[in-house]
Image: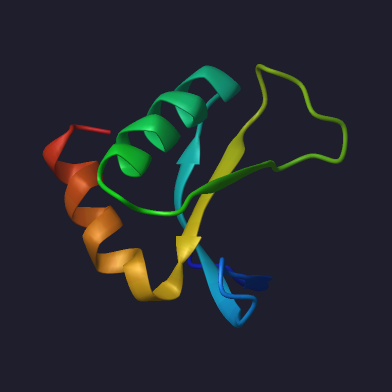
Length: 79
């Protein structure tokens, strides 16, 4: 499943965010966020449910222009 939503980048222009990974909990989402950010990719995580719980699923999203690079890192790092 690929889900996109609008956002604003550092320059203030609009870009679309795409979900590249569904993490099983917040810890996994935060670890993946760190790995992707080390690779120079902007990342945001959002809980799937309205009430954020650490043991719920989290969406890991990146700008659509960085999806391929993010997928490569996810595969390389074994997520």
